[in-house]
Image (cartoon, rainbow, N blue to C red; front, top):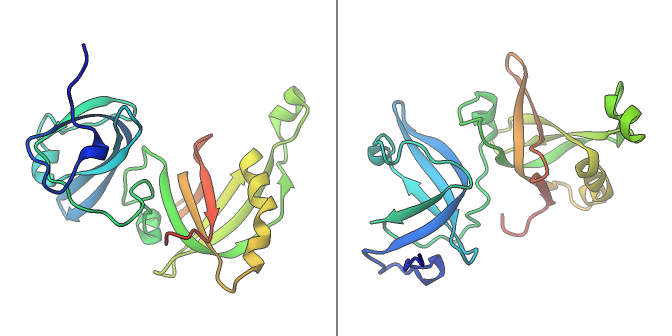
Length: 212
């Protein structure tokens, strides 16, 4: 049965009493108070147009809004539309919040900082896949710092590492080179220490993004 829902591209600030049928692309949480959270979603309509949805704490605890699942289609209704001048698909987590593990670690996250250390491309030691596929897995390590002066250790592997190495010349271009990481994972190595790694095939990066 064909759905007669409003498309995201047709929404305006005056849109009221509309329903949007959309697919959930990303889910994450932020603390608004010691015992309160907001849920944030990036959703896409059948035409691929995207929008960010914020579910306040007053609704996040209700059964209907309790859980959202990536790749799930849902109807969203009775919401307020506000303008956004930022890229809604890039929502970076502050480094201090990452170090304190104060976020939902079930999903890959976005990070933004400047490069303080950048290593060279290396072959992983004791690589079990080399015997199977005949090619060793390569990796590259680097460190990022954000405005809170917190630093995060990062590591990319495989094709992602090779792409980073190919574009590393951009680090020498400016005194402070920013690097945006999208869909990367946080791994706990030991108490108080984490390692940021590529979160699978969806992980990407961008040197000195123009939208920051």
